[in-house]
Amino acid sequence: MFDLLKEMRYNNYGESKMELREKLIILADSAKYDASCSSSGSQRQGDFGNAHMAGICHSFSADGRCISLLKILLTNACIFDCKYCLNRKSNNIKRAMFTPEEICTITINFYKRNYIEGLFLSSGIIKSPDYTMELLIKTMELLRYKYHFGGYIHVKAIPGASEYNLQRLGKLVDRMSANIELPTESGLKLLAPDKNSDKVEKIMNYVKNKKSQNFVPAGQSTQMIIGASKESDLDIMQKSENMYHNYNLKRVFYSAYIPVNQDKNLPSLLTPPLKRENRLYQTDWLLRYYGFKVSDILDENNPNLNILVDPKASWALKHLEEFPKEINKCTYKELLQVPGIGVTSAKRIMKSRKFFNLDFADLKKMGVVLKRAKYFITCNGRFSLNKDFLNSHFIETNLVLEDKSSIKEKNRQLELFHE
Image (cartoon, rainbow, N blue to C red):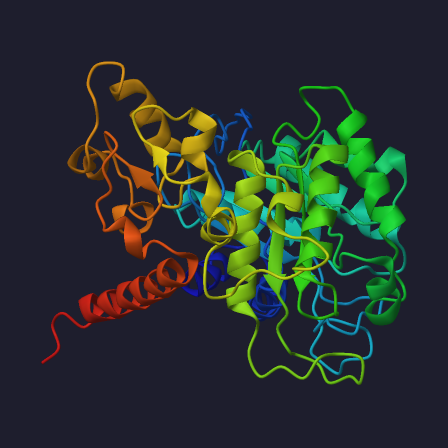
């Protein structure tokens, strides 16, 4: 990429473009803490770029292709002083700011050289929310109307901006997002006193109620930081469940808190809580695709997820009275409750058993993860294990051991060519 910036300098882009390399280093690095750069659902086309169907989708498209987005900030300067943020105003860090024209120049040239397929643009807040939004809108107008860029664009809306500016921006981008940041108002007051969730949810409500195919066609998403404040997993997932229900969000992203600042109100962590983040994503998946509710998985007596066992297996262990499921007779909903059976394999099972009774060998061919599912199913009334040993302690112990074995096997494969 930086070779391209040198090339742009020598192709009459002007003396000021000598600064682009340094700006890109600073503002791309500052944007890395935002996890919510996903995409899907847009059908925008133009002279440069194409977001039609699977052309520009998420980090990985529906067919498994890796999609690259240019992920940068307009500026890392900010008038807010959020305690968890590297770019907070009280931090003594190097600041930078792109002009709208510079962002267009980089985006178009990177796209032409197949470095990227779309743009994810966020920003610190300078002067005021509406002033920052005007700069974002100006950038989008240049990309769409001057450069005729039809590729995927995801822009972070600025909480507190006017509805007029939200409408203008929404007509230019494919996805819009506003980060809720923390799951409770008390957490925001402690760590981000300049923010409040009402302004974020006002954006979500506006996007939800705007009925137009040309307005944010790929929908909206948000992000919560995990581990910076003391909320339980129950608090986090209840917040997500409510936002999915109230605002039709495409995704809630969970970003493990990275300790980049020192503050008495921040937790003392040596490493980000990545395992917890993973469990929250798995729970989120169960809510969106498997028909689970938060109350099925967490409650006041058990407010946090089991780090050792994934949430569906944890639910199954607490409800062993509902197992085993007979593969050849149970409903689609019941199949989705079985650890090791996903949406795709459940559909294959439902389709195939119309023609013949399935056995364990058939399930393996269909993509069922038998090393997990075998504890919870029968085929033609038969277990693959001695059922006398099937108690919650035995199953959980073996699931944990098998997970560790899988990790060890992956590491061994990575070292395939080492003696």
